[in-house]
Length: 297
Image 1 (cartoon, helix red, strand yellow):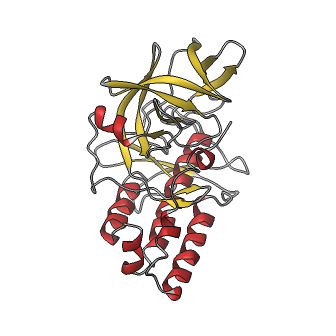
Image 2 (image 1 turned 120 degrees about the vertical axis):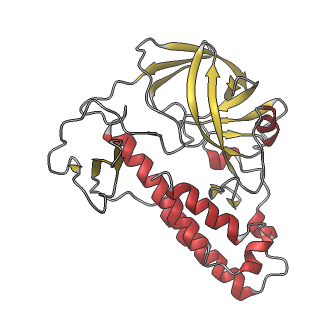
């Protein structure tokens, strides 16, 4: 199925439009910085990855990819070598996915969600914050869930400059949509934990409120029954040690996403102010976005 870049291909290229009034030197630097950003956000993960588990002074357990500056900690090494360690019964505080969703579901029963055909795609009806519902394009190839500004406001989400931004690659260039937190989602009778979503109008068609990506479905084995138009979601039971309700692969994805996003935004700060103004991004917002992602490490 289509990915985020294909879904958003009808969006106007902000960076191309911003060329008007920008000198060649500034534009060349902007292109260079964005190329670096792309390499950071979509590069190949490092082959060695370790997790560190430790307790703070209040007894709260943390799992990070960098050891604490002081105090004892347990090293959980990669499959490339070392001991995976013995998981403790307690769970880390505020363990969240790269998109901000919480730990995996405990039920083993498979949920069957009815779908609606829309050309070569399927739409699924999803509730947001128990306040509103809408149809979303089901995209098992997309890593991010996208909701329209209209349904975000109906769900009680305030859209303003305080929201962090996320660089997103599209077929027509890079856009910088805001990221907002949703308290919870519903798919039929299935409740999904809250998480962070990209707020952007995908312009898929009338009556479509966004795109459902794998960030909200990563805790499930996803099966698409195309003949009967049914989405089957069966909770995945992680093999091996589980930390904070998730396995190592989940934690790897979380830290890789956060660090690449932070690095990409830090590189974006090297672009001159007048160039950023052309794409309607302030230096202050980039800096606050970096802080937002750093606080989730």
